[in-house]
Image (cartoon, rainbow, N blue to C red):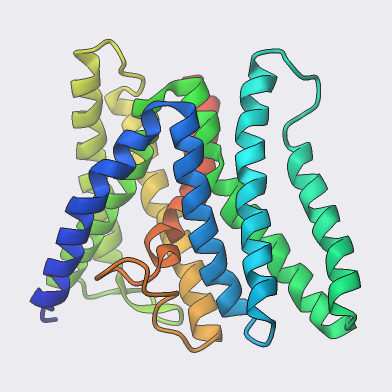
Length: 281
C-alpha cells in the first residue's frame, strides 16, 4: 500500500504544532478542564452533525455546549469533592444534565420520533464523549499531570505503530466489516511499540521520582491501549459507515475531524484509570 506523502506531511506538521500545546495543558487542573472541555465541544458538534442530520443546527450547537459545560462543571465538582468541600457525588452533574436535556427536548421538539433519536444520540454523546474524556480529571487529581500525558501520548504511539506496521507487513485483516485497512499485524506491532514507549516514559519519570508503572505492569497497559483504542476506533468507523461519511469533520488538517483523532482516546481514558486502580497503583 502506497503512502500518501502529502497527507502524511500535513498530519505530521499539524501534530508538531498542536501536540506541545495539548501536552502542556495537562499541568494544572484548570487548564486540563479548559482543554478537555474544548475538545469535547468540537467532538460533540461533529458527532451531533453526524447523528442528527435532520435537526436544526442551533439545536445541535446547544446540545454540544451542554455536553461540554457538563464536563467543565464535573471537573470543578471533582476538585471540590476531593477537597472535602461537598458531600454530593460529582457524577450527579451528569444525571442532572440528562434530565434537563430530556425535559427541554420534549418541549422543543414536539415530535416523538425526533425525540427518540435526539435522546439516544445525546445519551451516547454525554457518556462516551463527555464523561469518558472527563476521566482525565481523575487521572490528574490522583496520579498527576505526567500520567495524563502518558495516556494521551500512548495513543499517539500506538496509532503510529499500528499504522506503519500494518502498512508495510499487514496481511491479516482485523475487522473487514468495520475498517478493512486495519490488520492483526498492525495491532501487534502497535502494542509492542507502545510497551517500549511506556517503559521508556517511566524510566524518564524515575529520574524525577514520578514513575508509577513497572515494566511488568507496562505489559498490561500496552495491551489495554491496543485493544481499547481499536474498540474506540472501530466504533467510530461503524458510525461513519452508518451515515456514509469518510471523516467526522475537517477540524484537524490531515487528520479529519476531532472525533477521528480521539475516538480511541475516549474509551482508553477511563479504562487506563480503572486499570491503575485494579493494579493498586
